[in-house]
Image 1 (cartoon, rainbow over the protein chains, first blue to last red):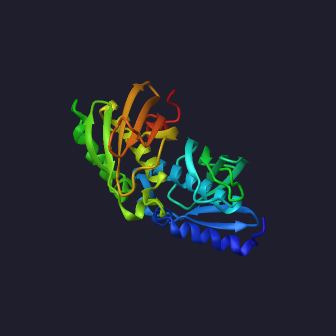
Image 2: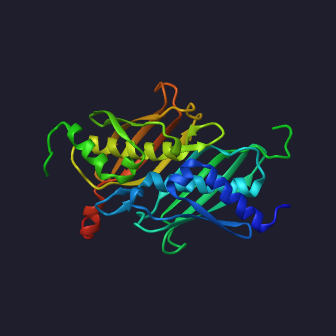
Image 3: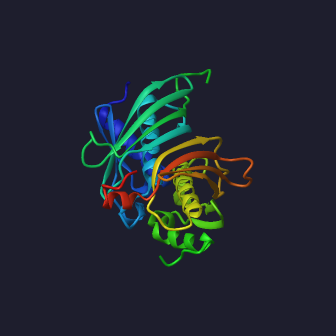
Amino acid sequence: MSVSGPDLNQQLADLLGRIPYAVFLGVRADLAGDEMTAVLPYSDRLIGNPVLPALHGGVIGAFLEMTAVAQLSVGQGLVGLPRTIDVTIDYLRSGRPRDTYARANIRKAGRRIANVQVEAWQETRSAPIAVLHGHFLIAPKDDGAA
Amino acid sequence: MTDQTSNPTGLLPHMMIMAPHASALGMTVASVERAEVVLHVPFRDDLVGDPERGVIAGGVVTALLDHACGQAVMAALGDYQTIATLDLRIDYMRSAEPGLGVFCHAHCYKVTRSVAFVRGQAYDRDRGDPVATAQAAFMLNTSARRSSKATAT
């Protein structure tokens, strides 16, 4: 990877700033080396069940998916944004009305398909509130045959 | 227990109002039948996922499918219960057309004592040509179980 740390951070901020839906959710991301942590700051409109209260499951799913897309975009040098093929989301705990964090683990990035796992947590990383496993269609920059 | 009638239609708009995120997305109920609902999210510039193509974000479709599946469970139960998504599997067939909103049809086809099973299709024009399909499972009555832990599941 020829891109240096600060450039990647800027790239990431630019990417999220360009996606209207990421701005709508308020998603931002921090990079430490090549490890990205996405942050979903709490906001009242993210609530699905005001009685508990709990974050909307769909918001958590969307956040996990966006984390995967962002991690693939900054780390892999792609043409365009990755396109989601399928995701499976397991909800482990209800999302409390507070900030949520997520990290993506790219298990494999091939010539066309990337296999990604993402975990979201709130208080402690060892107690995730949801995990996503998904496949994404990607187009690497250096692959002329794609 | 204000609305225990056999027709759950009256309950759903109430539920929609209760979910701030559904309102934030501009979600509306297009139709409700027993165990089946159709919800709609109109296109909006701030819900776009890929600015180059101008299509509604996959995450919006995710949230819509999740919400519609949950509403289908409510419609099947016919009364209000706190439910929680257990898992949600979504297959994305294609992007929505630029500038179009998304509909979602969800059908709760099985309810057991603790779990409800739902299938959903998200589409922009034609239900037979879906943008995405979903399969979901929900835990039922989660708040009751939380308040009385001794209750057998």
